[in-house]
Image 1 (cartoon, rainbow, N blue to C red):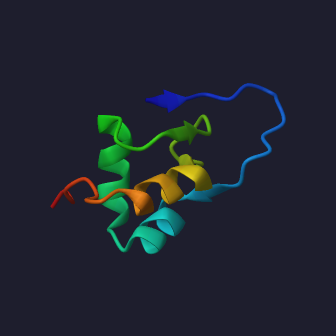
Image 2 (cartoon, rainbow, N blue to C red):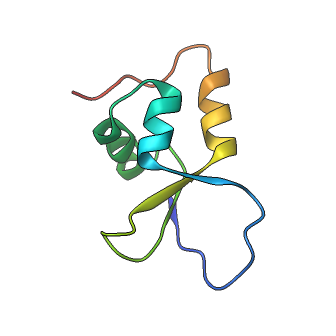
Length: 73
């Protein structure tokens, strides 16, 4: 579930894949895999160089889960 945001004001704080991985104590590759699998909601910034941003609310949602999704190797 990847959302592309057109020119609009985003009020929610977004974090990078690396920041999300650090917060969740996972590998950045796992975060990217979960984005592709739809396990994490993310915003694609329009280029591979810019990459994805994850809403902070999504990190908080994952931290509240009784069992997080399995980490990909």
